[in-house]
Image (cartoon, rainbow, N blue to C red):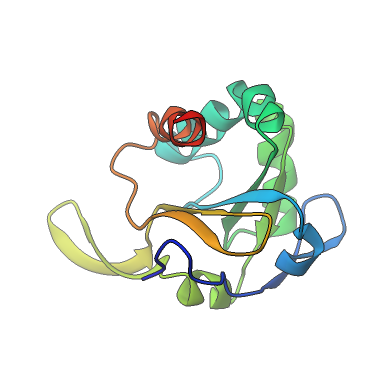
Length: 153
């Protein structure tokens, strides 16, 4: 589990904008890396649209929003177009970054233990250190507002 002050592990993933993205490219910026299970599913859509609706607030607070799932870039592009998402989605098809960040593993789903994506987020500071780690997001719809609240407190 990542704790505030820990150096966030670097990563290198393809983005929905056709470019490779790596944490080191964002030095000097705050980054919200949010992990979600699947494009265009109910909870993931609510979360993504929440970040879309608060995108200006997050940008004004100096935060770059990046969503991460194991979906393909094509799936990401369709999701972005369908919901007018203004941020890049990264494709972690082998789940290596999710594993490193604790976003892949055992979780409860409909009362059963399964292995899958753990909805979580990491707020990373300009220096690459973790500011906050939401190891398990309890409510996808309310999470974007929770992130903004954390930033303004």
